[in-house]
Length: 306
Image: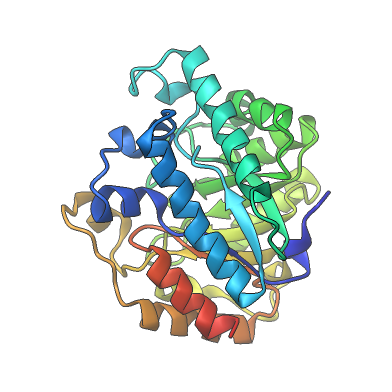
């Protein structure tokens, strides 16, 4: 299991989908970055996007978690994207291969970990599916098996809204022989969309999977939404190893209704991260989510890894 981010600082990328959609004018049907995997200029733009973050990590002498653009590329999204299941599978394969080639195209003096990213089966802002851990494991195994075939270093479940789905992803990854990371999203009250407190969710997944995930993260929330719920003395706090925060303080409902990007304040966001990293030394993986781009992650790197 090659997971140096457990011991050393790492960066990852920003809000890929919002960056391409709002900052660069790319259409992303159903908010799916897998549509950038087209063998043409969209694909080249995607690789240039990652190169910017890799350069940043190298400048700061920290590792980089190379997260695949496959968050919304699981079976239920094939038909809405106008793809056959076979075509969607091929795009998943190609996405991983492209990133694998990217991490060896230059002799970079930093560790680079390749992660197969998957999102929730349903909406990333609502606890709408699946209803059981067994159902989640069966559903997500399709994409996880593709990641296993491509020999990724780990699986990352991003923007997970329920304990049941987190358990299912962890069990499916274990069955495929891959370590996994679970990144929960929380509402403005610091609770998962299903209502479970963050610490309770981490403890529940660990209890049901025999501490299956390698570690946990929080994403798609501003630090103000959850910082007050982080207790340095809590038994689960050492399991929280990373953050991919939103630039905006808006709620999920407000973000979903928005027609313009809320990019927040990169320096203010970075200062929030610096305070958290000072309090919680195990927060090793830092990146961004909705509304963030290279500017935000650069500010975070300068504040936390000068």
